Image (cartoon, rainbow, N blue to C red; front, side, top):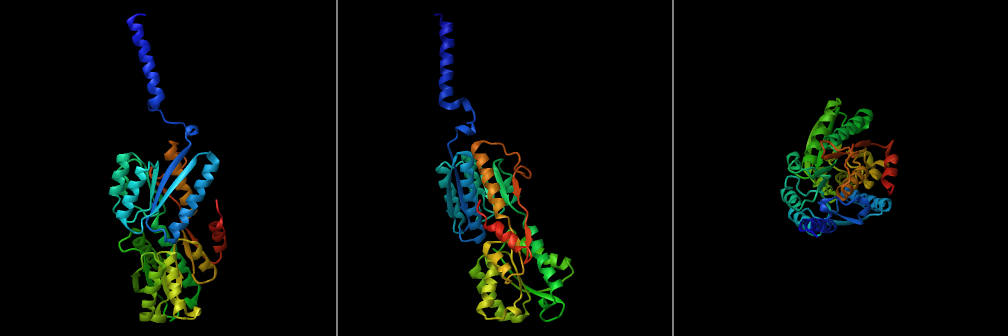
Length: 352
C-alpha cells in the first residue's frame, strides 16, 4: 500500500476515534439525555411565598420527569439570609456539576461573586423573585430573571385600599375624610419594599383619597417582627390607625396577630392589605381579617423557571418562553378581594 494511502486511512481512523470519544463538539440530542441536575438556593426557606413557590417548582419538576422520561435531580439550599452562605452554596452546586443554578438572592446588589463563578464554569443562572440590578443581568448572556414587576403590586394594593375607603364609610373611623395609615416594610433599601410602598400610597392619592402617614416600621418580610412592630405602633397611635399597608402577606398577618393580642374588637380594626396571595393570606381575606391581597403568581413563576431551567439544561430552544429582552420572564399580579378569593384559593390548592 502506498504511503499516501496509508496516511489517508490513518487520518480517517483518527477522526472516527475523536468522534467516538468527544462527539466532535456536537450537542447531545434530548433523547440521549438521561438526567439533568438543577441547583436552587433561596434567601430564606421560612419566607412563606418563597417556600410555596419552591413547592410548586418541585411539583412541576416531577411532572416534567413523567412527561419527558428525563430524571430531574434538584439540589435545594437555604441561605438563611446570608449572602456569603449563598455564595458558598453556589460554589458547591457548581462543583456538583449542576446544569443550571436558580438563585433567590439574599442581597440583590451583590450578585457579582455568583455571576463570576457561574461564567467561569459556563453554567447558566436563573435569578428569581428578588430582582437584581439590570446592569448586572447584562454582564453575561447566560443570566436570566423570573419574577414580576414590583410597581404593579404597589399600584394594586393602593387600588384595593382606596376602594375600601370610598365604598365603606366605616373605614374612616374618626370621620375626618382622611385615611390615617402606617406601613410595614420589608428590608431596608430593598427595591421591592421601596417600590411597593411608594406606589401603594401614590395610587391611593391618585384615586382621590386623602391620606396621612402616621408611621412606618421595617419588619423584614417577617410575621413575628411585624407583630412586634404593630404592637408598638398600637401603643402609640391606638385607634387612630385606619389602614395598614403591608409589603407582603406575612407582615399583614403579623399586624392582625397584634390586633388580636391587644384584644381589639374586630369592628374597630384598621383596614389591612397585603401582597403575595399566600395560602394563609388568602384565608385571611376569606374570613374578613384582610381587606384584600395582591396575588403574586407563584404557580406561573415556578412553571416558567422550571421550563427555562429544563431547556437550558438540555440545549433546547428558548422560543415560546416569552422572554423580555431575551432575559426576563415576568408574570402579572392580580387583585384579590372577598368576591373572588375562592377562585385564587382553588388555584393555590391545585397540585400540578
